[in-house]
Length: 144
Image (spheres, rainbow, N blue to C red):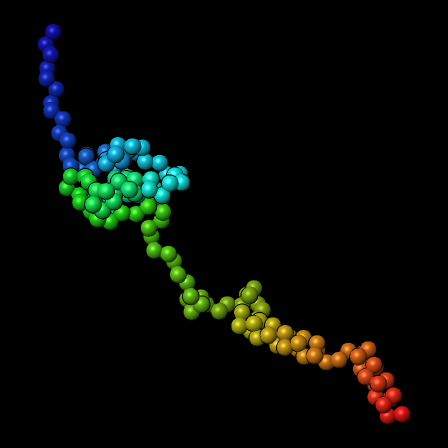
């Protein structure tokens, strides 16, 4: 039987980075990096450059930088948290459409509601029928 030698396998830096990124073990302590941890020191953090998982404490023990050869990134983020900037919308970004396409605009409805509220407050300040009757009777007793 004629055995042929297989060609050498070449492992590149990209292969190593990919393996580190996909590993679920911390490169410092070799312990499993788990997401649902109550202990703050074991919180999973990810290298911002190469994506390697670490325990928060292990990242700090490595000098606050990635321990992967050639990376040395000093930024990390908590695993599973959205890193995208939050979308911020202000009222000036929104058009002032009508509420249902046919009715008053939002600002018109706000003005109407404020006027209605002012009328209700004024109505509550005015004495009611029984209060006016009682006051009239008291006035009649004092006059007579």
